[in-house]
Image 1: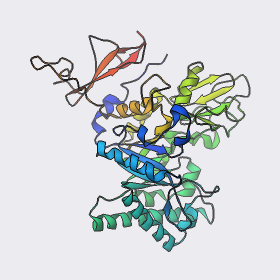
Image 2: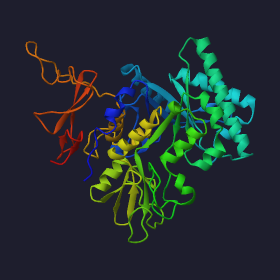
Image 3: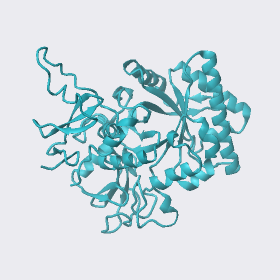
Image 4: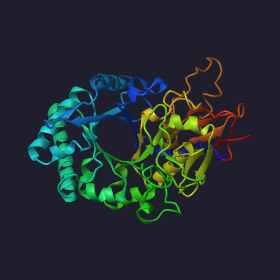
Length: 453
């Protein structure tokens, strides 16, 4: 079994935690999933992410931002009340999606007066519901007119929103509202949808959707979110990977510090057509829908956990990602090891941080994967260098607590616990944090990782 690289990237990243972002999306439709998969803001750890984006609002026929679900505004209260526990948490409301298959932006962006109406409604709505900013889920090429018109209108919208947010901060005396965007990663869509060098300046951060590179719409298996291309990629598919996509955004003029790399908490599924079951195996549509997400073509990570318990698990070394097969079902997904590889990669480019799609598809309750709550996002957080909560066990009044004082004078990093090899210490700025390996594994200081005895 591959090593569980709990420390990979951590030692390289401890210095950036204060400036990097970990932005996590939640969806308002996850409340309708059955049983322990039902997700609401009550399930959010307020200290897990630096920002939470609530998806999704829309634009009504009056060119105003508008909720979609019957209880969205009640959910807003619960989400924003988390800031009472963690005042550093920032929340944004995402607008986009489709109405009858058409983006709600189309009717609004075409005229200056309709954009102005939208912007006024956004400022009032965000302020009234205690959000810290707006997220534009703009990922489509032109649906009418020319691609050049579409790209230009997006630039105008971003510029006008930013200018209005600046003015509102002055007149209201409140912090300026944040502006972010979810943007496409496929090169051809980027070319049709964005004037990157003109638009990027108006955003506080840009979420590159570095997933859905492959899926059941193709006739052969491919990974959802590969870090690099594979040797079987040809044609435009050589660009269907994180390295190519983010490099292209940078080439077009996006500042590295504004780009956030996308980390999916789900996998894409296929139905195998022959006995072949590796990367590029012939396929015919998706595997069966998951019992909780109930949508053919993808499984949430907690559904993947159930599947891999009886499946054959493989690792695509060229692309630094795992996959699993059982019978005719195939899934390409992400785990802690692939997250570590991606953190190392994004560190080398000095990107602004990470964004996660979504909170509600990680094992948020800890009910499925036997790895505690939010196993993927907690691992991502630690790999990026954000310190976990300190040990709160009080030291005796007459003698020094050896655990609480272990890191005094030691450099930041991972250390073995001589008294219990199933645990290890993380030292961060003189504080001591205790971590446990997964069941059956012990900590090896030689690799700074948990592995078999």
